[in-house]
Image (cartoon, rainbow, N blue to C red; front, top):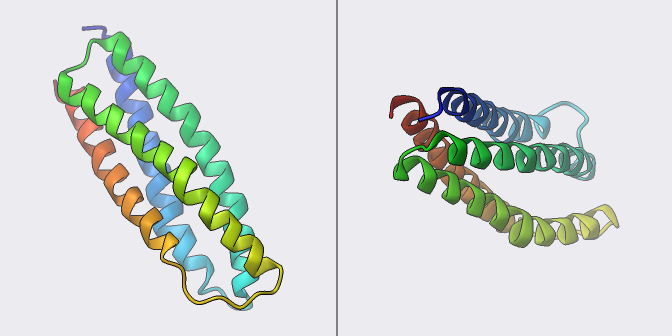
Length: 142
C-alpha cells in the first residue's frame, strides 16, 4: 500500500465531505432565512455557489479516484469512491440541468410551485455524504 497516496485519498475525501456539508447543509438552507433575501435572489446566489462547489467536487473526485487507485486501497474504499463519483455524476448530469431550467423560469418571473428536484438533489447529497464517510474511514483504517 502506498502511504502517501493513502493519506492523500483520506485528506481529499474529508475536504470534499466538509465542503458538501458546509455548502449543502449549512449555507444553502440558511441563505433563504437571511433578511431581504428573496426567492429569485437566493436562487441566483445558490446557482453561483453550487456551480463553484460542483466544479471543485469534480476536481476532488478525480483526485480521490487517482489516490485510491495509487494507494491500492481496499475494495470497500474503491467501491465507495465509485459510488461517490456516480452520485456526483447523477447530480450534475440529471438533477442540476432540471434545476437550472426551473431556476431560469423563476428568474424570468414565473411563479412555480415547490420543486421536487431539490429533494432529489438532497437525497443524492445525503447518499454522497455516506459514501464519502465510508470512503474516508476505509482508506484511513485499512
